[in-house]
Amino acid sequence: MAQDSILEVEGLTKTFHTKNGVVNAVKGISFNVERGEVFGFLGANGAGKSTTIGMITTQLLPDAGRIVVGGQDLTKNTAEIRRNIGVVAQHNNLERRLTAMENLYFHGRYFAMSKAEIKEKSEDLLQRFGLWERRNDYVGSYSGGMAQRLKIARAMLHDPKILFLDEPTTGLDPNYRQILWDEMLEMNKNGTTIFLTTHYMEEVEHFCSHVAIMKQGSILARGTVQELEEKTGTHSLNDVFLVLTDHDGVDDRKSANGRE
Image (cartoon, rainbow, N blue to C red; front, side):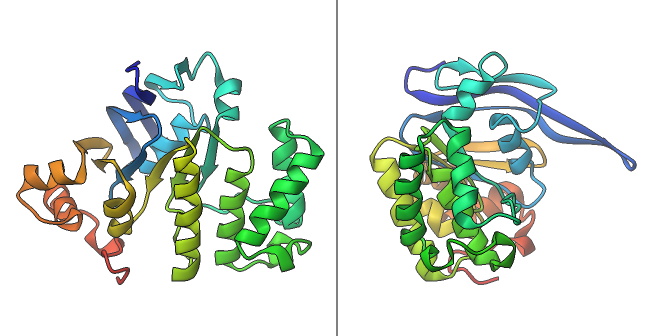
């Protein structure tokens, strides 16, 4: 593993067998993420991004390949790796029959946090994300945006070394998008690596040190935004994406100004 890498992926492969045939979701991809950076992972819907994240975060078993997180092989140190990562998934995986405080409490106990530490950090996060007044309400009564904010707060609770954000700002209004990024950048400044997928190209342009672009299970390119612009002869990440993916999924993406 490279000395400055917190994540290294080699030959990662995942195939699904469906009633309609075999789907090669991830086709032997390799890339690395540097320690302490904000890394952008882009692709149209169905490109394989969420499947890749699912394997890296121990939620899916790869068919082939190697994943090293923080110097540890995922297949040999799964429990330790889970303690060092935080995940904000696309789907709502909160326990809807529990309150916000209860969701955070059980998450913290899973990561061996003390009750006092959970209480202090939960109160702080709920206030910062505008959920304090609803802290004792069942999550099933939350709007989509509120649930998204709680998912993000939960992922931050145990101070992960690497935080995976799978389209975290979807459903958030501009004010909470800004609050999220203020919090993410503060965590990043304090040493947390951020792994981001998003359809908002300006988030990647503003915050990401390196970018990888995926299409149909393969990595098309990796580099800084400037390097990718130079490679494609373009002047924006939006145009880089269109050139490299041949306009794949353009109808599913948000443009840089947030409009459809």
